[in-house]
Amino acid sequence: MRLIGGNWKLNPSTLPEAELLAESIRLPQEEVETVLFPPVAFLEELAKKSPKFRWGAQDFFHKDTGAFTGEISLPMLRSIGAAWVLTGHSDRRIKFSESDKTVSEKLRAALRENFSVILCVGELERGSEGALEESLKQSTKGVHHDELARLTICYEPVWAISTSPNAEADSPEHAEEIISRLKEIIPTRWIYGGSVTSANAAAFLSMPSIEGALVGGAALKGEEFSKILEIASQ
Ligand code: PGA
Image (cartoon, rainbow, N blue to C red):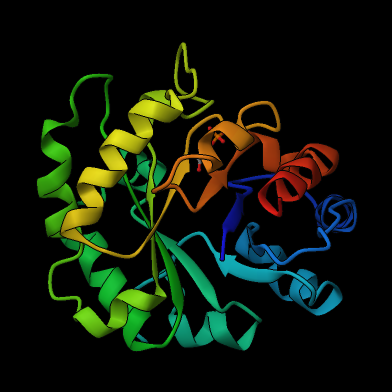
């Protein structure tokens, strides 16, 4: 089944705005796995009010208890309605210095705790895909083959993310080329992320190896995100 993830990042700023956003999203007739990643402060309320969506956390810590000031554990997230987590997003890797090793610790913990996971990998600059394979291998170190079914991997070139300077979406053909190559290393569901909109979603989803999208900016507009879901259902 196709997956469309909505990564709200640090938006919107209040719970009423977050509730309005969730209410404005229409699910298509045909099934599309729709997972929303709101700021964690709003997760519990949103998951209670809109159980028709799957809900996830943008970040978490890999241990359950202890002296880890400021962290939040996977069991805590489960208790407020999250069944999904993101890990390896470039915001975390770049702005919060998360290494492949940290990402792999988080990934293994999330799979152990029976969460479904979207793992993100992507090169920093156009043309620098050389390091991707190694990053993918290190980020998935120690993951058992039989856990792959709960793992969705998002190829998200950092230069294509809408908040990067001069960002523009990758071409569907290039994303397909990279994903089909990486899929040979980790054969699981692969999706694309980076400036996905209702104008380009169909082209990405028509590629044989691309089974969904992780959406940032366009996930903050109910109408636009609903259109992407509709496209994904076709
Ligand atoms: P974007 O963000 O759709 O705004 O490019 C995607 C992401 O960062 O997950």
